[in-house]
Length: 534
Image (tube, rainbow, N blue to C red; front, top):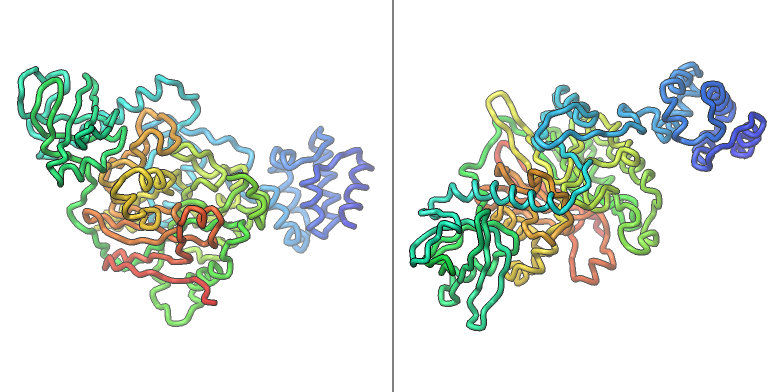
């Protein structure tokens, strides 16, 4: 009935109303105020078709008009303001301009994150903000791999086992003992069951042979994947080198940090909000826990940080016929509703959220910030900090403590390595994702093989693990796992979505509603379980 009255009024004024706006207006139950708003739009613009964009373009005037309404009417229209994007701090229509690599420039997202940091949220984003404006060409991929090789070579040169290190073009025709660093361009098994690699550096190519009669060495060589940058020690000439040692870049930290203050950080991911299988009752139970509504949980007041590492929503159009699996079929509505849930969490917990492959951003990595066009409700949450994927974030820094560096990566590359590295295949690593994460730490790269993901060929490879993190957290597999690797805490998070037919088809067995909690002072890890017991 309200929609009919609104349409009749628009016809009287010679206006057409977009169906989306009409639906939003019809939900308010305050026809008289809406008529005044429409009149205001008519008088302040030359538009005769009223869409959400018209409201965005006249945001300041409309907001000023809202303030002239009685307080009771303003409350009725508050939800409408949010859905029209009139309450967000970063305007819905604003174009986000990302700076070039390595250049600190102003942009609205970073400024808002810095403002939150200044308010005392104890979080510092260490990652650079990347530029994706230029369409890549073949030359960009060549530069990308050349620069990646140079950076990885610098990392490997620190290893003492690579003595007498030379470039490939400096190897003479005489047999000699040498070390080299190269990117793996080919790998095969010979008829004698030896592994034969072709590697190259910026000066040339050479073959490396790993003899099957050296079982430990052979086992290490089996783990080598194409396009990874590896060091080799052995003897040979300019034609071939017979390896005695294989040296991976290896991520290592020498000591396990401990904060001076007892604080907790929690890790989540793969909520898939909007799916019919979203475990909402369990998630509401988790929110009650965070807000101190669960008895006998004194530790909850010390929870200060919450990471959500991708697939916050289930998205739209991620696979054929996905609409059959959706409870909420509109991408923006999924973000609106999940923001309402996250908004219930007490405000002294900082929530750090990065995107995944379901979150309405492009799949090419690094993935940019959530698209403000759809995810604007997240930007309006005062205790939420958004990052790219992957990202490096520092938490818990104090006057006499440097804090913990946390590397977050959703994990889209994981299936490739689980299905192509023999060691991981034997362990069925999609059900033990912490093993994949250890493997990537070993390679100091989140996706070393060219075909393992779609990626943007930036001048600096955003997937290199340059500075070794204290904590590495991922998602994507829907499996919970906790481990340590070279003193690095490795965390894989579980899912908040029930078993999907896709997972069942491939034999993936999800874990549900398990939340790792890390004590920054004692380093104790505890798994909180919010799975509903039938």
